[in-house]
Structures are given as C-alpha cells and as structure tokens.
Amino acid sequence: MFTLDQLRGFVAVAEEGHVGRAALRLRMTQPPLSRQIQRLERSIGLVLFERTSTGVALTPAGRVFLDEARRLLTLAATAPLTARRVADGTAGSIRIGFTAVSALTVLGRWIAAAAEHLPGVDLVLTEMVTRAQLDALLADEIEVGLVREVPRSDLLASRLVHTESLVLAAPSDHPLTRLGRPPELADIAEHDVVTYSPSEAWYFYELVVAAFQRAGVAPRYVQHISQVHTLLSVVNANLGVALVPRSASALRLENLAFLDVRDMPERTVKLHCVWRTTQQNPALAALLAKVTA
Image (cartoon, rainbow, N blue to C red; front, side, top):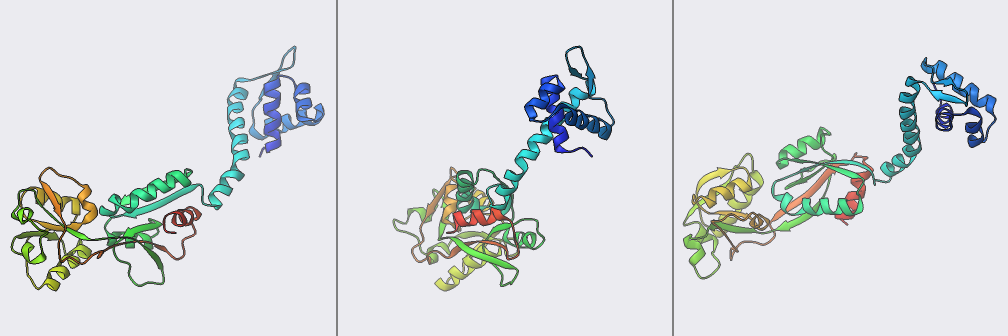
C-alpha cells in the first residue's frame, strides 16, 4: 500500500519533471525521493516515469495516476476539516419528515435557517402524515419530524413549534360569506361540511368533531378527505365548506374564501417537532438550536 508521502513525492517529480528539483522543493535529498518513487511503482505495479535527456517524463499510466494522486492528496488535506464540521453540526445531512400543512409554516422557516446558518448541511425532506413519521423515526428512516401529536414515550423527545386556529374555507359565493358578520359554528352546521378522514387525518378529524360538539351542533358531513390541500380543492368545487388551519389560507384557489369563526377556540391546532432521544446527529442539534430556541 502506498503512503501519502509517496504520493506527494510522485506529484512533485511529475510537476518538476526532474527528481533533483522535486527533492529541493520537498526539502529532502534526491536518493530518499528516488526510493519513494520506486516503492510507489512497486506498490501499484506500474512504471510511472521514463528517463529523458533532461530529467523524467510521465508514462501514459503515470499521467492517469497523477490526476488520482492529486485528488487523494486533496481529500487527505480536507478530511480533518470535513470531520470537524460534521462533529460541530455545520456539515452533514438531516432527514426531515413533515406534514403537508407544516410546509406552509414551520418547514419554510427551517429551510431558511439552515440556508443562513448551516449552509453545509443538506436537508432531505419527505412528506408524511403524523403516524407515518412516528413509525419512520422509530425505524431510523428520518431523524426529526413535524407532527401533530406526540405519544408518551421514553424513546421520543419533542417541542411545540407552532400553534394556530381553525378558520372556515367556503366557496366565495356561499351564503356563509354573505352573513355580514363572522359565522358561528351553528351557522356552519346548517350546511354541507367537508371534513377529514378519521383514519388518515385523525388529528384534524377530532379537532373538528370536538369544536362542533362544544357548540352543541351536529353538522352534515358529506366527504371525508385525508389531505388539507385536497379538501380545499373539494370545497373550491362547491361540494361544501370546511374548517382548516389558518395557514392553509395561503393555498389560494379562485373560488375560495377564508373566514374567521366567531366561537372557534383559538390556537387549537398544534405542531410539534419530534426526534429520537438517542439521536446523535450534530447537524440536527445545531438546527434545533437555531429554530426552537
């Protein structure tokens, strides 16, 4: 196996075209340098130089090997710096799971913070519902998730990173948009309501059910949808109205209006970031320090 000193000697001789001048450049005598080149050639089983009247010249194999030798020396020089950056969290990658709506709020801030403070860190993003994120965390398929609820577990740590309220999404010409006042839950219950899938979007499903129960009304649910952006498309097509997170109002469709609901409790929609308590990714610790301080 060749050594880095042998590679440095080879590159110097190749660039100088003369063993003596290369030895002076390396601040060594000529015989040890010649022995280094000989050992290198024996190690790789190739003749790298041929003698000329003025010194030495690279063989065809030597010309190819020169590029690789330079690359290896560069890697050797930068490896300690790269390792230090990974250790202090300024290099590496973070695998992030996120829900569709969190992409409109927290995820954007995380991406901006990483770009500003951790430009050497790659973010690997995967959209998943909360339940799939929790499974992926425990399977070490992602390192942090943006989820709606966190189960009690010694294996997971979490922080609350965002809260918001539910608002009404309705077709722009819907009767609820012409009340002359913010609608109440009782007003909404008189109309067809598009809501969430109790299996695929259980968090929002339970929020909506609880809100109407507190108001003492029972709406007529006409569709059950798993994703907020799909639900808005259904409302946009005049199939009913829906309660959605306020941040979803950023998804403007031509036939949609968003209205505050007078008796809707505030900040009931919560988003947590969650990670394994055993995670040891310095880049994730560095990002969390920037975005959750």
